[in-house]
Image (spheres, one colour):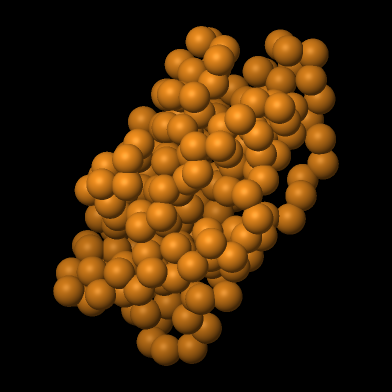
Length: 201
């Protein structure tokens, strides 16, 4: 994925260094473990949003099937680990996500807080999509290339869903302005953290 493609498809301003795939190949058990936990956390995060915003019918209706899908993804990655004779390791701190949370508005109006929550999820899905595209193109294992291509396509849909929810509940100009700020911030986060092949982010 070129820089132009990243910008046009996902809006991300900084593409992943292609060398990341080489590192991931050498840490396959770790990358699959981290991926499994990413899917698990995605399901739990959707449940949390549903609980917090139970009065918003569209959000509840749209995210409920996503919970099932994300948990299904966790089971798929877990099955892949088992098939390869690998074990699910311990969950590790996600520095990338923690850095994003530092930018989330803690004050402001309820609308602003909802917007940031939706855009954080959109950003995580966008970066995951971009990383899965890297894996789908750069891994030597053909089965895993196809495996990650399917995940890439799913993450792209999830990214769009969170953006659509933001634009449904909030003014589109407000969404675009804040999304631009998030993209700038995320680019800085990517430059500030070390490139590691044992992490999806």
